[in-house]
Image 1: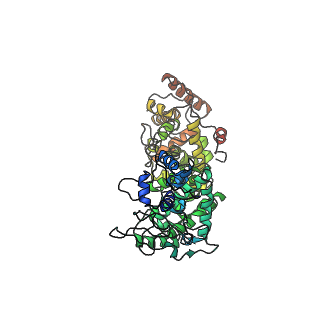
Image 2 (image 1 turned 120 degrees about the horizontal axis):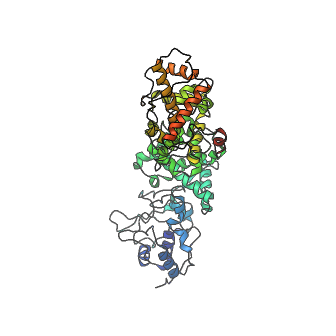
Image 3 (image 1 turned 45 degrees about the horizontal axis):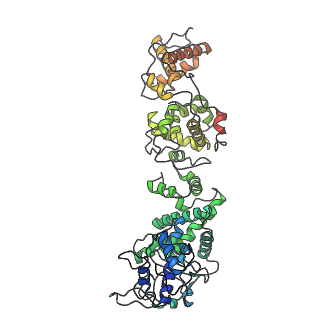
Amino acid sequence: MRTLPIRLPVASGEALESWLIRLATRNRISALQLANVLGLTQRGRRSPRRDIPAESLRRVENQAGLAPGTLDTTVATFYQPTGWPILPAFRFCAVCLRTPGMPWPNHWRLPYLFTCHNHRVLLRDSCPACGKPPRLSWTHHAGLNTGNICTTPTANRNDICGTDLSRRPPRALAPDDPRLAAQDWIAERLQRLGGDDAIADLRNLHVLVAWLHGEPARGTPAVAAAILRSRSLRGRQNITRVPAATAAALTAEILPILDGGRAGASQPTPLLLKPQGPFTNGYLHRLAALTPDLRARALVAADRDLPTVERLRHRTCTLTPHLADPTTNDLALQRIRHVPEKLWPDWSHHLAAPTGPGPLAIAAHVAPAILIPGSACGDLRAATQLRAWTKTTAQVLHRLASENPGALHTICAIADYLDTVGSPIDYQRRRHTFTDVTEPPELGRAPDDDLGRETRQLHTRRYIFALLTGANLGSPNHAVSFRTSQDSAEYVTFEQNLDRSDQHQLRAFAADLLQAAGIREPLTWSPPFEEVGRLPGNENA
């Protein structure tokens, strides 16, 4: 292995390309030739490769007389923990380049580094003469010129641009410019890149800036205009192609979301984080890319703007919101075994508000909503296995959420309890086992109503069937379902006229049917209020 005749230390924070060019200049050879000799280029490329293996860096360090690991901070992969893409070329500070032999920092090729920390000016993106980004590709002239000279090849590739980049007028920023504050915020986190909190902030920054860049209408009019102006000049770009000025405007717009969001969800929801109606796949994909803490803040902030079903699905109405996992499509199908078709009577009364839906409406329509929290099933397929998801169901749920602010949280808490603790009753098995009660018992007392014997027997069948299966008799799917509104009203009267001995007789008959079917379960059950409330995150439900 040959060592280099003249060696040069790596400057603090210097990019590998910059060091190679300075080293080539000292050795009086082309930087491209030097990179080829060191095995740092790929066939067909006129600049060092991005994905340099660690063993190649160790070899070059040995050849250049550098301590092992010195070159790790000079390559693009040093910033890999941020999740940021790398610019195809470098930005630059014209004032910095006036210093002879000035090394080009590695961070000048980061998409969210747009100002010079020393001179407080916006970085430049391109050569003022040829209009090309500097060091996008190399020629054999690179290394044979000082670092402030643009070595972009001319059209015939026999010469270079040769413009002095240091002569480009700087774009100074006022001391109170928010773009400087945004840059300082980023620089502070890059200084402690090994910390989890710094990495989380920088990853969130990239997701949100890329989001805003892709949807300019979600930003302020000034930022939207800057994005559209950039597109008119350069066409639609990804974030690695936007000018430094546009990147600065985008970052300054996003910073309050990242920094101010920690103050709590009481702040106004940034337009960027507001869903436009139900969550779309694109919106969910953006949220999923955020770190869990920011994702939770975004979900809580978005809660007031979401349809009721989405508030339940992603638990935005709770203290622990999280996106429904699209890989858990069977979650609702597992939970459905623990949910009756008609909500438990005690919970129906518990959820009722003085001016909202009454217990009967809640009992008839709310049970399917227990299957929604955490379910990725966008079309409510699981919920419709209990009963059809009708317009009335949606209206009852919406009114309930409006009149009882804690109702949706309570529904999520019940779902959590059933997922965690379960139920002693397998309602799904009972629904399959009992489809009707064909021979109901005769009540042991004289009836206190005007019903005929046949009608009374039908209502008795209904009562026992509902005890066994938790059925909603208003659903048309059962042999004993209500046929008319008068039918339903008569049943309510029948049920109200049952005294304790009647209820005891019918419950004992239903329990015997369970035993005969080999089902060893209590006849009825409901989730205990206290235990549901004791689950983590459900204390306020």
